Image (cartoon, rainbow, N blue to C red; front, top):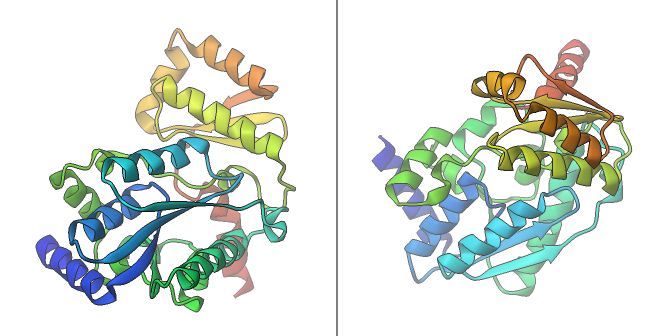
Length: 272
């Protein structure tokens, strides 16, 4: 079945022929970019959007990936859009509208026929307001169209020798900040530095949610014991306090995708 989906993806990309790939450096867009590049003779370019709420490490990875595979790559600088400065519940919708407007503009100015992204078949079952914006803007999602799931993409990436096949999921830094909170560069950098530190300590995929001067750490289940009993626990506390947090807490529910969306989902359900 996965081979059928893979061949379907090839056909979709060949038919599109000329396109810009919105490249975040995550597993999905990396696989999509690599597959499109491997088909040869397609007129493609990767475009990465550098914003204050995307970790610098993610931008660096896009540069390394495209250089290694000798793929054309453009980075577009964008400041924090005013429409999402207060981190509204609809931030993903507004963000996609803003960012993909820039990507579509680049595509038109450089004679590319389409803009595509790495949305996969699993994404339609989650709370993703950004998908509505992509549909409205007629952004193509070949992975979703071909039926490829996240597990499929990881499996194919591993087979094709891509080092990112098991890379943890990454969401923008705005997801670490409560809704309806004014966002500033200081809090974004605090979160980024804290997560970079925890990654270096051996806790990849860990999220640091910021609540005023409190850091709420969400980690994978296997990391609980290590964080609590690790002799470096005091170093974690000390380092996060140096970054600017006053209180350091460990969320006993652990990391879960879209944990900040629970109240929004509840609100929408009650409203409807």
